[in-house]
Length: 143
Image 1 (cartoon, one colour):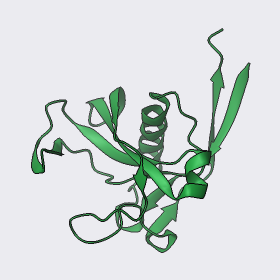
Image 2 (cartoon, helix red, strand yellow):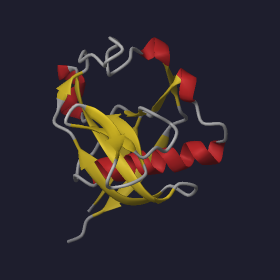
Image 3 (tube, one colour):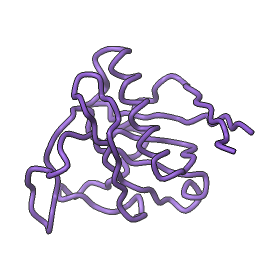
């Protein structure tokens, strides 16, 4: 059995990828990162930071991520759409140019209204987002 999953992808308007190739690389990484947890994200996967970076917050302190370079994403499943919650995650890469997926980590589900240090909500309103062209990914059952 296969599944077709249409996902709406958003980028912060301030971080729209410079090229279509980079946009597609980020979208592929975002999807692989969510699928690592065997979830089928539905409405949005939102790259939180377009640039690849190697820092994270550990015990409340910003520091170098021991797992390496990654892109930070947030995503929602169909269930989370109605509850206004999401999951933040890191998509770790083996190469910062190709964004080849290495592994993923996922935080606990949290409300979209959760505030960042800056005081802004972690899940921005649609006014601050740019929607990428629609892309579908298919999955083949392993059975």
